[in-house]
Image 1 (cartoon, helix red, strand yellow):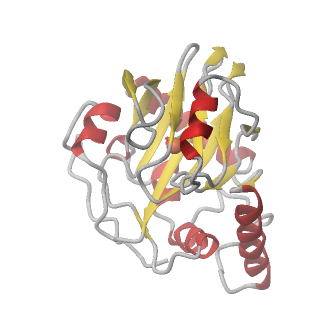
Image 2: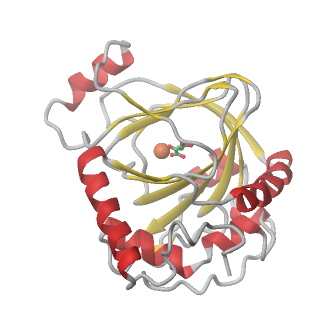
Length: 265
Ligand SMILES: O=C(O)CCC(=O)C(=O)O
Ligand SMILES: [Fe+2]
């Protein structure tokens, strides 16, 4: 069902009980524990990436442009950072289109559940923001933040010509010296920042609740494009209306979205 998108020879995760899938899950857990991030290069094969890109072209033309400032650090820390990007939501993806099919594939939900050791685990239930394509053109960026939702999985669709790096400081949310780490960061003198360089087609599992991260400003074309899939421990969990308005400019989906048949992970 997703073999036309995902390289199932390289990543045979369809049968989660197979020895190959078990080994991948173990590797993912090890990487997340050691580095705070697990990447799967070539998760989309060449044809799958091309099909995803074609759909992303259309979605980005119809996306919502967000430009504002926010402070996404814990209360009392940090300062406002810039958010500038284009977002297209799940409600804009035709049923059966490549991103829609990938998100609704239970095999991926189960795999993410196993790697993150969240059982049961569900696709985020949001009709708009559960699955989205984002685009960062020249000058766009997503300032430093912690994520507000549980599990974010990204698939790089296109790298920026230059700039647009994903930068992060893993696993610092609960550190007692978080305030001074953030002071150093906003003053531009932090030595903790790591950069994650991934090629198009790479799937990344990342703990954005615990890690500070940002997308640095894009400096030259082409634009950076990312597919983001969200997962939750609560099958009814969606995003707030504030997120809907900020990222998508609407509270309600454009067209009613049928039930996604949420499977346990
Ligand atoms: O595009 C990325 O690499 C990450 C985006 C992100 O951090 C977010 O949407 O919260
Ligand atoms: Fe994030």
